[in-house]
Length: 84
Image (tube, rainbow, N blue to C red; front, top):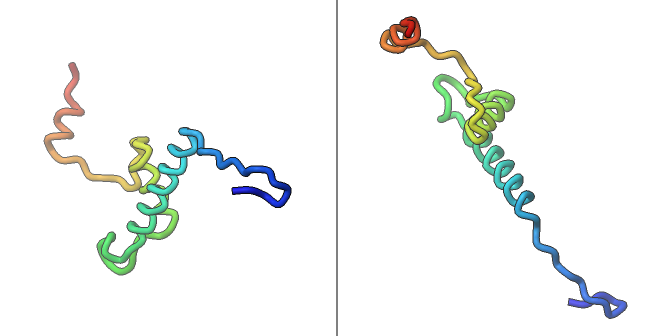
């Protein structure tokens, strides 16, 4: 491939870090879109954009931040309340 002046255009490959960031961003955007679908939530409609992007980001990045509170089961409560 040449330009008008006869110089060649060099196509640069993306840096591996750019590929990783693009992969994370793409996965988060796809997850957000899927979570906004009506079938992804109980009741009417899908999740709001903010709920969906927060949940997708938490799932992809494994931060451990829950998007909603969950009730503890009896077994979990017994284990967490016992001291060692």
